[in-house]
Amino acid sequence: MKQGIRLFVCVLALFVLATSPLMAQMRRPMINSVVLDDFNDPSSQWMVRGSRFVNDDLLDWEWVRTWPEALHRTEPEGVTLRSLGVRGGFDRIGYNYLEIIPAQEDGNGELVPRAIPLPGTALSLDLWVWGSNRSYYVDVQLRDHRGIVHTLRMGDINFRGWENIFVDIPTWIPQAVTYVPQRRGLELVKLVLWTRPNERVNEFYVYLDELRVVTNLAEDYWDGEELGDPEAVERLWNEARGM
Image 1 (cartoon, helix red, strand yellow):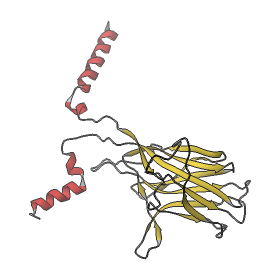
Image 2 (tube, rainbow, N blue to C red; image 1 turned 180 degrees about the vertical axis):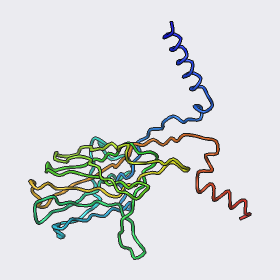
Image 3 (cartoon, rainbow, N blue to C red; image 1 turned 45 degrees about the vertical axis):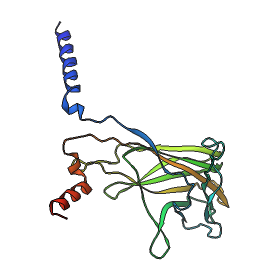
Image 4 (tube, rainbow, N blue to C red; image 1 turned 90 degrees about the horizontal axis):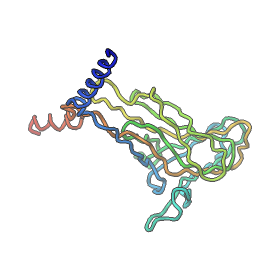
């Protein structure tokens, strides 16, 4: 009888909590898959750098008119589909790497690294890669709000043709803080293609397409939420000063 009373009390408490104004303010998760770069537009610039023994005569990257059929059987009307093609090679076998870095032009027209902000609270990343069955693998580097860069293994590319590789973003990488504003999004710094010492490193090609993030775009709602937005606060204070 006592157990039945305890169960009734617990159920009643959960019902009261679930229907309380506090719980009503909580937003449901909004899980979305967001394309960070589909590599169709060469104006979304990238750059490629090699490690010590890279063959500079082979190193190159272009936006090539090819794509995985799993994404698009044919080109949609009015759209030119491309992928980012990377050519490389090294003078010695070993743990060599190519850094594939989002870029932008500086004031002198030179390419410099940039970071890609990840929207919301990022849950996972995925990328389509064309491989030539060599024992290579791909890492991704993410920077948190403290400036710490985390390296995650996306996957091996010792397969033939196009495949989708992905990595879950572990919860120990911080994406929020306790004070307002709480959300602190991650930034994608670079992709890194590694070769293993037991694999040949003469001229090779790799193609990249459809870089995506699966993310939660919802946040908990609370009364006065807009006062945690630095842009909203600046606008309100400027209005108060009569600006």
